[in-house]
Length: 102
Image 1 (cartoon, helix red, strand yellow):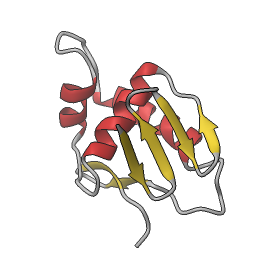
Image 2 (cartoon, one colour; image 1 turned 180 degrees about the horizontal axis):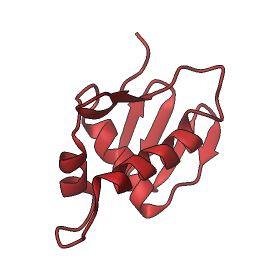
Image 3 (tube, rainbow, N blue to C red; image 1 turned 120 degrees about the vertical axis):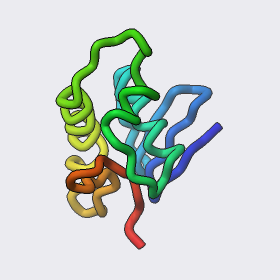
């Protein structure tokens, strides 16, 4: 039911997200994107792969939309916690991954 990356926890039953003790409010799409990244911990996911798994198959989603939603997640998950390591990473030319500092 719960996915965990570092101090970030996502509960797929209650649809709640928290980093440390701080709850984080996400939209349905943001939640789906974060869940997909967390289920694929450490793997680089292309924008096309993300589109195919997060949005409806008949949705007309552009790669820029993925960039925007990754930005939304970073603003909620990484930026409010400057004393903690970033979890969402861009792999230039390939896509995105979520990974805790080693």
